[in-house]
Image (cartoon, rainbow, N blue to C red):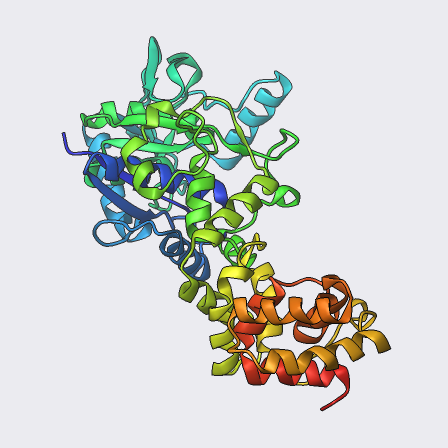
Length: 462
């Protein structure tokens, strides 16, 4: 059997991290088994679906590195096919017209509320003669669901789940205006797209029983289900914006790398021994949907930051420079070249691309560079004198790191001062801050003209 999975988001908002993880699980499982991964946009909710949301979903998946096979399927465009299936079931006696008015349905809801029970259609039109139809009331088409026995789903994550059929009512397939319901559209699309595995959040588990019954009514093979637990906040509560339940594009804008997000989302509910750093190639080799845990995973931003720091340190310097350039203003080619030359030192301490850009800003600054108040405090009269004194020694070197370090150490020995007494004002002069990569590395990256010019500026010699 060829494995075919799908990711089917509704474009009523951004692609949140729970949806992104569902897409990742589908993608990994499919790629491991050499199958087909499809993308379907479930845009049947016309009032809430937006083109902007569709764009964000597609851009988010591309940024995350999840490619799909074939064309994107737009669910609303297939409404005629969905309705056709409902009418076929009606013709076969597996569905029926229901003429209940809005008032009658509200009476059922009120009765259910009073009894403390969920709303359940009472089947009053199930066996009535269609000739009894009510004039001027457009009927809906309801599935004639089994009323006895059980519906059993052997879920790949949740295990065997059983529901008594007498608690499931006859769901609506086609509304009075002729539009198909979500439940009908999903089943028809999954069948027509040859979906073999439905991997989705466990908030859809209740839907699976009704969908299973619809598959049986249509005489179609039922796909295997895998309902993945949702992601919770650090406090164990349902994930909300205060926990970081943002769109995937927000994590990109906060400076996280796509490989970080793939690794992090993978570890939310799935693991491979004690491995924390898992490359995408390893994930494809190792991932099995059956190994996903049943308990809700918890979002941990500290772990995400640490993981991102790892991937930043591993990332190509040219790529990081391009990402940083988009966050810096008025950067000339010379400044950008300095950023790339200094990237090895810059990326050691950064946990996000935003931090990396802030750390790199001094390399692109125009002379005289801005100097923070803390750094300015290091530029005392003695500090400036030491800068003026060490400058000729630096100018006499080839401006390699070893030569610069040797020149400074010889200078401090000759003047009987501590290395820090020179290094601190040098850092203030060169970076405008009290922290930076190694000072000899910074000088070598800046180059002779720029470094000596900044030192002269700070010493008051320019």
